[in-house]
Length: 319
Image (cartoon, rainbow, N blue to C red):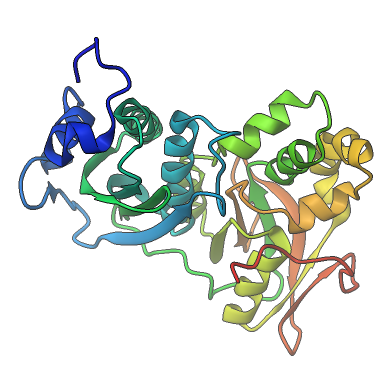
C-alpha cells in the first residue's frame, strides 16, 4: 500500500492486494517447505504425525479494539492456539489464519494485525503459512495451529493417576485481573492490563513436561478449576488444589482485587486466558514448574480446593 494512502480501506485495496501486503517480506523457517502464495502450503512433519488445533476470536466477545491494538489482537490469537499445541507436549510449527472484517476497515490495521501474528509466531520459530480474507460484520479471526511431537507420545488430559503431583508453568489470574481493572475503571495496574491484552504462555514448557514424564496436561484457557475438571473427568480421578501453592499468584493480583472489591483467589482459580500450563507428574516436575496440588483416588471425578468444593465459579463458559 502506498505511503501516501494510509487510510485506504480493505474494499478500496482489494483482497489480493491486501493478501500480498500481509505476506510480503516475511521470513519462513526451514520447516515451511512451501509458504503463502499457492493453493495450499507445505509444512514438514519430521515426526510423521501432526498435532492440530483451532480457535476463534470474535470482536466484542474476545477482544475490544478500543482496548487492544490490532498488533495485540494478532499476538493473542497466535498465543492462545500455540498454548494448545504446547499442552499436547508438542512444538508449534505453523499457523493458518482466517480473517473476516468490514470492508471499511483500514488496510493498515489488517497489516498491524498480521505483524502481531508474525511477531508471536516468531517467538516459537513458527510462521503463518496461509489463510483467507473475507468481508464480515465485525472482526473475526480463526486460527489453526500445527505442531510436531518430535518422536514423543502426546500428553493427553486422560492419564492422571492417584498419587501424581499437580504442577503449573506460567502465571494465573493476571488476565482476569487486567480485565476487571479495565472494566471497573481502576487506575494503575498497567502490567496486569497488558497481560489481559497479550497472554504469555510458557513456551517450551509443554515439551519439557512431556520429556519429564507428565501423565496429563492442559492449558489454562477457561480457568484453573474448569480446566482441571476436564483432566479429572478424562482421567477418572479427583484433584485437590492447594491455595498455599498458588500464593504467588494470589499475591500478584491482590492489590488489583482490593481496588475493585473482588476476591483475588477467584481470579486465580476461575480466571481464564492466562494460557498457563497445568500438568500431572509421577515425580517432581521439571524446572519452570511449581507444585499446586495432588491427584486423588475419588469417585465421581471432581476438583476441590484444600479438600473442599470451591463456592465460586470454576471458569469461563462460551455460552
